[in-house]
Image (tube, rainbow over all chains, first blue to last red; front, side):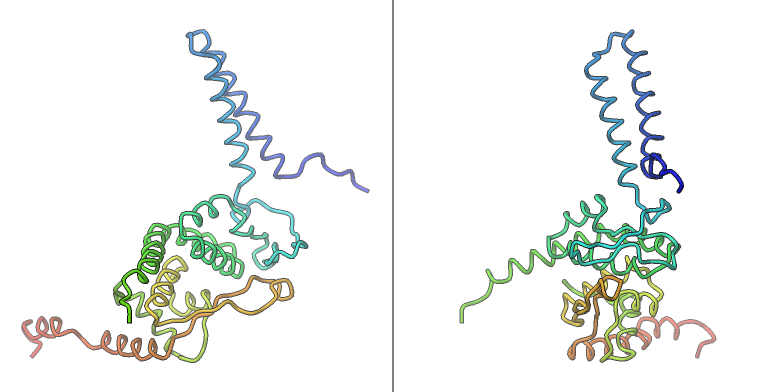
Length: 166
Length: 108
């Protein structure tokens, strides 16, 4: 039996990015300490840079090239994952990505949930090549969607106020 | 919100009008119109807001189907009438275009 590799590809990627970033940050601190800059500020800055690089890699969109483990959801979750066998790579659920979730949160709640679910459904059924274009077009449509969904939500909320009594 | 009948909106309406009783889901709309999902989705949303289109989530078990549920769109009765009127009027050349044509030499 082959020994289990110590790190998964994703962990390797995180380490490969985090370590050089951290060492660069600490190198910069070393250099700047001579110039009399506040060491604590620099330390905090270095920590922030390292953490953001780490989180960026952890949240790397898997559909864009990083292979992810194929697995099904067993927790009664609504959607299966990793079933896009034609594409060769498992698409990560859009709703799981922090960026898309943040975008959806900018919309009225119902509209945001629906947008995410619909995007999930569509991206699941297309190939990896098409997915890139689709994601790009979804991104471009976000500002218009925000205006539309909020306009529609506000008009829906305002409507009963102006209803005339019969 | 007033519905502007752009070329893209007309394409979506035409796709839905092809078989008015048939429901189309997002990907089918994109395939039939050649529009990208980021363009088609706001149009469908606007058409639904105007009452031309109605939509529903597909009633399936995603785990059994091994895919997420789709959202199906179809024209409402009123929407179908308005949509066909809009598509017909869009096919007709506008009076301004006819006047411009008449003014051009060699066209009469």
